[in-house]
Length: 402
Image (cartoon, rainbow, N blue to C red):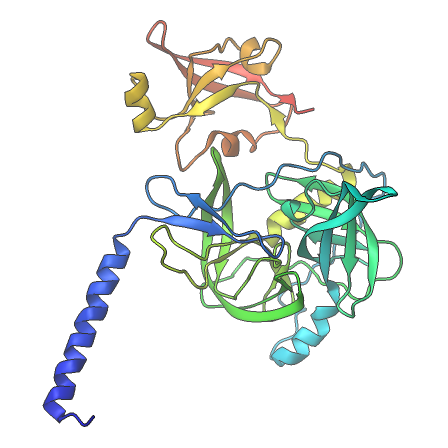
């Protein structure tokens, strides 16, 4: 069909108006998020909180056991900007760093699959990377959660058994160790000076089958925050648009010097109204990795403080339903005897509103504020006592979570 110039101009105007209207309508829609991480079939849709924000699914529960190790903490290689190569062709960079990236298989025991008793079966897969010649591998906690055994597969297809060293569900980090030689090691870099627009490379076992898949992109944002479960948020994340898929969890995010600047942990692929989102990947910063991994290797766990309450998060809706005079903080539903909260005078029905002067709200969840402290620290806790209508500040000493 042949169109005149006037007809073509009219069609072009209609198309532009349609695009603009579509953009406005899309911007006003509510949000439902899907976290796609871990194994090769684990996309899960989750409802976002208000104000609308993409909300990944909760991280998995911690493994039933960790391995306490007495091995001295190895020196984790790091690279400064002055030491890093520059102008290296991308294919050469990938060839250099790829051997250190591995596939991690979570195996669990199941009864009844054979006459010999329980069998180890793979239940999910993710990615990891080797950080030292001693065989220490970093991955996500949710990749190896509840594992009975761990298989590590190198980029050339050979596999070895991995031993769980330690895990930290709060940061979604874990360390696995393998014996014998390693095919490669990659250093942890720094995010200091990292800017939106800087190039990045992600390597991971996409869908669990396409091992050592290489994708590229740019840093899209820094200091991002995602609510991962009720009352818990991942903070200070790197947002990037290098494509990552189920199976990429625990995989490294590299800068263009071959330094690991992050660990891929979340991806958002679909909005509440069915719209698809592209290029929304999130990674834990290398600084967090450096800190947590050193503790896990030395101690086998991160000793988080114990406060001693069960609670419900407050928001305006809960406050109206319950007839509460405050709409931020946490409503204590249980304060067991012998716990720090009870020892400090906090009881059921109290509303804790601040810790050390910092207000508890959606931007500052209770758990995130609490985990800034160590067991044995003494903190100021502000709470509202419904029975008397008074605001009280008490000091209490945090215990150690067993």
